[in-house]
Length: 228
Length: 304
Image (tube, rainbow over all chains, first blue to last red; front, side, top):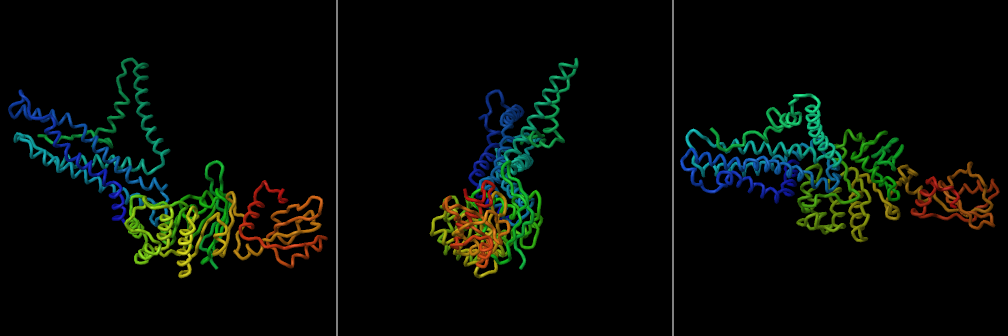
């Protein structure tokens, strides 16, 4: 049963999966070589390394962005055929709804491994293509694992959202947007009313989500291939 | 005889304007039960309640001796379902659809499913999205019967199909039922289609069950009478008057459509000073129309 669910998701997503895997493979290579050869003034191992870090910083936002895109697309794909058929087929199958959703989620999660594998291979190739000083290491596996976890996180969130009706999705997303707006308004109001008030509610709200131990920390954490 | 499907005082509200209220339904084991109703009368909603896709607000539903919705996976494993519109995954081929579907059913008959593919002239390599409506209709019937179900629930299975495909689909169902003791619950607004093979009939209108009886009783019990000097009141009549129509206002002759008629009931008219001039049979479609007409609030019972 699971094998067949995996097959249907593979079949509906395979054309989208290949470009993602290629992009994930190419991104680390671009990040280490994307700014071209080391320019004049960067000669020497130390400054060469600095150039490498600069190049990586330039490409860094693309890693979580690609991971979120992969996860979101996989999640939307997981339910797309069921949405097209108003879930009638799924509901007529002799399987409990939680079990069906769990297996569907598991199948999609397995597919998310493919771009992560692509990124791992790309990161290995990128590591092999650069010379780094002995005090510095490359972490292709850690980068690939982070990419996989970020994809999985995005996949889980969007899978849950896509499982519901459009109305439910709108309610959840608007509640989230409403919270951000509310905290921004609270910050403005408090600083206008209370002299010397400096606490940023909206900054605190976003940070509590994306910084440890926030649920989205994996997106904002250390995405470096090269580290000490 | 036990009932394969039993609905007891089921109530469900869909939106602001439609409600199924206190619906009681009994589908005997082994019956081919025709569920008749006009478009929008609640047939599909009732079927979705039976299939556990919708949750009743009140009342009890049992299918194959198990409770809905608590025992749904077990019930669905013994039930073949053909929805109003084909619902299959568009990107899968016929062969892939069979394998996907088969993985959920323990009694799936793989060999027979491929025989049916041949018999119904389907191409196993073709994707569902490329298939015509008729081919999809045949495929969903195939999926429903190749799992060897004890109960078949068919929601307007032939609606919109051409006569050849319609015959193929019904033949496949009847072949299956003739070799098994499966119960069939089939909804339709095409009355003549059900007349040929259903042995029970239920008529639903505006979410309410108007009638439920054996097909023979339905066909033989509804008559059109021509009555001279008819009585004004029919409260004590041994039959149900569905409709009364003046033939000519100047003459005391009316046409009555009655339900539950038996020949001996002419005595009722003799007692009231009336005379029955003619007793005519109604076919199922006419009976169905008269039943619906009599059940609607706008009807005054006099056909005017």
